[in-house]
Image (cartoon, rainbow, N blue to C red; front, top):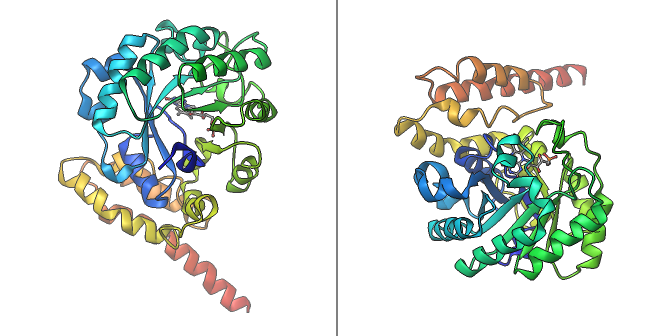
Length: 337
Ligand SMILES: Cc1cc2nc3c(=O)[nH]c(=O)nc-3n(C[C@H](O)[C@H](O)[C@H](O)COP(=O)(O)O)c2cc1C
């Protein structure tokens, strides 16, 4: 599948959130959304416990690994390892503003060093045949987003980058926490749309603040793909309509109840190898958001689901809270009718 096709809808790389259990869950909700890992540093891939850091299951495909780093040789080596592990894409992080990341001179501060990022991309491209992509901001600090984004894009594309994902806001490296840097710098979708107009043949995905599938679809009039982070994580139910709305294919499940049932074998396998229910259900708390019973669902998982011996029965009981609440609502409707 070309990157253009599966690029239409993706979920964002999110540290502590998009681990393999989260991705397995999202994959049950959409067969086609492109899923990104948490960021993992090049050195961690090279020297760390690979099964723990980049292990994934084929069922997650298409799945892209996001690397952090700024040493071309290390990134090339890490990219080669990830390609051997079977990832569909290697993405380079040029957007993360945390201090830890700046200390290592990578992430968003690389917006100031297009030539170095280009060297990183070229080195990775030389080692792998899977797509190499870059996720960046529109600029940092006092940079002019018109010049900064063009400079970065032109440099990495000349080095062979296959696609760009742009978080449509600046990062302020001084004075804002990573969390604030995801909300406070204003969104500028127009800047990303102009990049696409200037580079019509380059696959470009837009990210940042997209809260619904309707908003995401509207973006496709301007760019090739949309990447949703927090909305997909906090309201995973929206992923249930991605395959039909973005890929013209049948959705995998009629509703969230059916999706949870389909996910049970994954959970059972995780429990059977000594894993905890909470490792998985912590990524499911947003399911049923906005429905009657959603709060009771979350409470069950938060209280009973964290116990060491919690099993599938806890999840089933939590889901039953929603069924019961919906049944009560339906009963009320019938009484009114
Ligand atoms: C908890 C959390 C962790 C994140 N970790 C990463 C990361 O590892 N790499 C990255 O490029 N962006 C990371 N981000 C940023 C997201 O990928 C995304 O760019 C940002 O949340 C804006 O998109 P959204 O408004 O759709 O959430 C993270 C965001 C959150 C909320």
